[in-house]
Image (cartoon, rainbow, N blue to C red; front, side, top):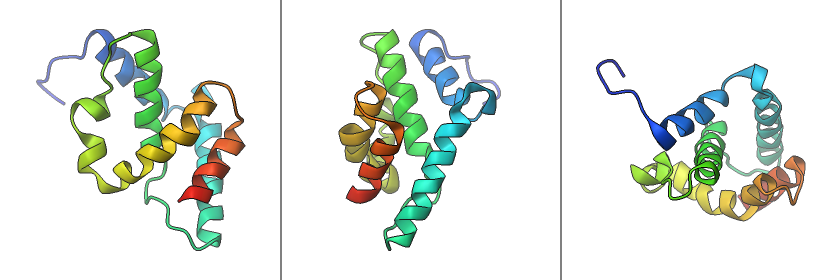
Length: 121
């Protein structure tokens, strides 16, 4: 935002992590492709998924990765109440905590995390 102060500390790290979600060179394109494939699968099952299905994943992942790097960091989506204000994002938060967090922790595969999210939608 023009005129706004540049983020510093853990906020800057989170902004960088979130921005990386849109950079194909980071490998996040594989993540987004997988999310879109599972979005199609959810539609085929008659389930509704977000119009912009990647946004909850970006907000959650950037916040959690930054929190690991900077203990005590409050992720942007939490600090501004985004999960509570944006209905679709709020609906995804429990699913991300339940199924996406294990993928971030390395205990399940990407496909398994996404399959579980689609199943629970």
